[in-house]
Length: 123
Image (cartoon, rainbow, N blue to C red; front, side):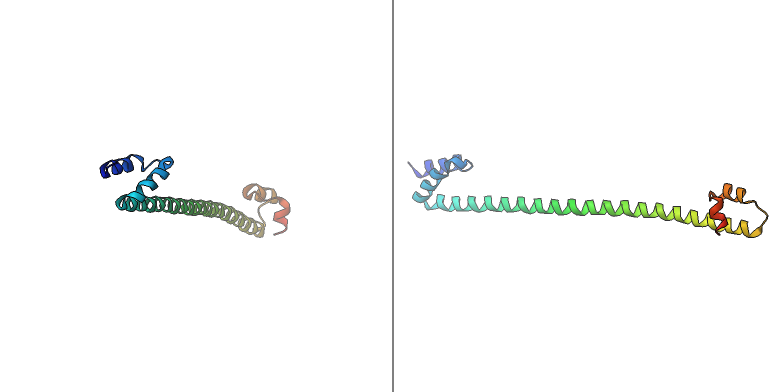
């Protein structure tokens, strides 16, 4: 087989894993093909490493994206709870002031503030 035919066979079979044995035989016979096989193996390893690195990076990004989403949900929930707590404290303050005036019946204070008469009595 001529050198050109060997190179032709190399190019035809280089991407076929089932032809590795034949490529190794060609590499033993031709130093140029041997170097080409070494480079092909190196490139294949680099592609696997690159794919692994991309996979790792995607996992890292997915993790932090999830964490950011959880943080945002937690902040939103905290805001809502804070608003509700502030509104309740405001109603307690209004009830306390209405009760201190002594002119507004407990039932009306309860109706305006949403507090029970027992809660108003405890103020």
